[in-house]
Length: 117
Image 1 (cartoon, rainbow, N blue to C red):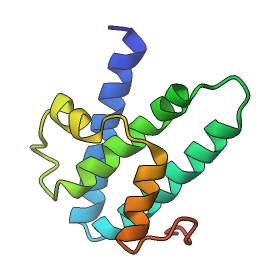
Image 2 (cartoon, rainbow, N blue to C red):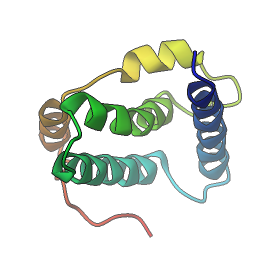
Image 3 (cartoon, rainbow, N blue to C red):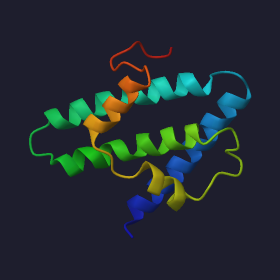
Image 4 (spheres, rainbow, N blue to C red):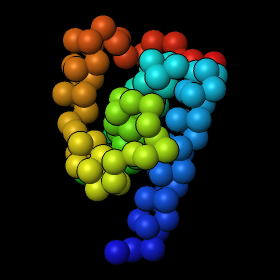
């Protein structure tokens, strides 16, 4: 496996732990994190789709770490003992953006809403 991929696995795990710490301390809620990450995913997808030369799979690759963190956030508060990267990655896996946006709209989360400050 490419060294950069291994580094990104570690980075995702570290950010997931930070998200858990922020939630446990009551600094942000899981819902606020979800809203923020959903906005970031939407923006990343739009930015990636607008770049010349990026294939749809490249754009999805850009969005994967965000989906990974959203999946970790949705898994609950036990980020000190999270499921393995492989298990979370399989759940977060490739997702068509239109389907993800439709699910958020169905669940009452309109795209383009204000982000958490």
